[in-house]
Amino acid sequence: MKNLDIRITVADKGLTYRQIAEVMGVTPVYLSRIMAKELKPSMRTRILNAIDELEQVAEKKGQ
Image (cartoon, rainbow, N blue to C red; front, side):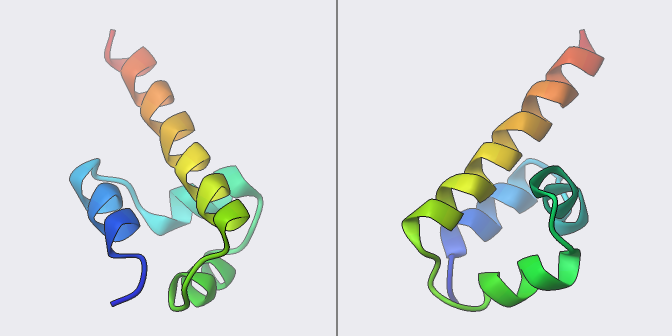
């Protein structure tokens, strides 16, 4: 399975690909399609940044 590390991170943090896509400004369908292939480093960084952003928002809400 491609991008297993990202898939595990998303599941561990309780996020959805829809949330990540929204932060990235792409459609969930597009995100799903690119996740099916090996990611370019720049796209991997964009996805991980979106995950970090969502995590920070969740932490702020939990304060």
